Amino acid sequence: MKLLIASDIHGSAHYCRKLLEAYDKEGAQRMLLLGDILYHGPRNDLPAEYAPKEVIRMLNERKQEIYAVRGNCEAEVDQMVLEFPVLADYMILFAGERAIYATHGHVYNEANLPPMKEGDVLLHGHTHVLCARQSGSILILNPGSVAIPKEGNPPTYATLEDGLFRIRTFEGETVKEVRL
Image 1 (tube, rainbow, N blue to C red):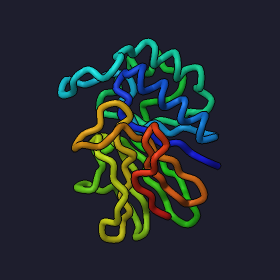
Image 2 (image 1 turned 90 degrees about the vertical axis):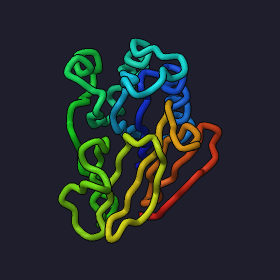
Image 3 (image 1 turned 90 degrees about the horizontal axis):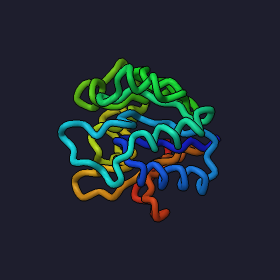
């Protein structure tokens, strides 16, 4: 199964459309959203075409294909309008023998790891900075931000298929990749 992974849409209808176009083009079967879906947050400028109600409509149309975890900008009111679960703090996925701990990153991150075994993977967003690197015995993965990338990064998402994690731009360029 091919999984598309994205974080930090922050209410941008423009980038949500681009994300859904990429999802279709990639031929992914499921989408994993790593939080901060609707609200831009007080520290961020408004993203392009800030329209949370439009993002709600677009994502609800795909509700049967979306898994999501809670970001630091999600609240109970978001769950009232989104028709798929968004309030779980984390989820555990498996890629072969490796456990993938998927979370937003505001609680658990490289500086504050959840309980993990050697060889496990921490997958998170929150920083808006893409990452695919080994840190000790743990692999750290971050797809970057769909709408508000930081540190000179372009808007990105990731795919995971057959143990290959790829961070990609909306123009189809692979920025980073790592085999799990």
